[in-house]
Structures are given as C-alpha cells and as structure tokens.
Length: 95
Image (cartoon, rainbow, N blue to C red; front, top):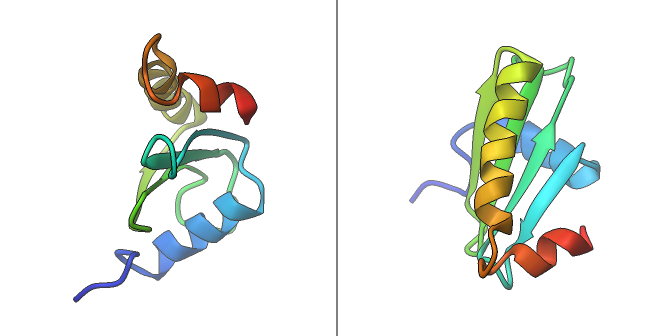
C-alpha cells in the first residue's frame, strides 16, 4: 500500500507547508481538507505549489510554473472553501 505521499518531493512541499505557508484554508477536522499555498520555494523543482491534505492524512501537491498560475488556482479554491453555507466558511476566517 502506498504511503501518504506520491514521492519524496511531495513530502518536502508538505514539510514546508507545515512550517509556514503563505496562506492556508480549511481544516481537516471540520472541513475534511486543509490546503496551503507556497510561493517561491526556490530549493524545490517548482517554485510555487498548493499542498492539500485530506482527513485521512493523504497529501496531494499541485505545482505551478508561475506565481500567477498558482494564485489563480488558489483564488478558485478559496472561493469554494469560503462560499456561504460551506463547511469551511467559518474555519477559513480563523486562519
């Protein structure tokens, strides 16, 4: 059975996200998902990434070639998380 990361690089992005992302949304307990935006990760293959963790601890990393691409995707994800009546509307304000 595979681990919670697809590869070693995903684990590195996840560690950076835990150390202090540029932004974060969600909560694995109340929303069943937590996401973090990383900008300018110079030591990794792609400088910009979004790291997502589900309530079971599985990690998914999406990388971007430009900051603009990362911010566009991040904005779309924030809108979904924070929409009125959504489970993450309250927890997004707490972060």
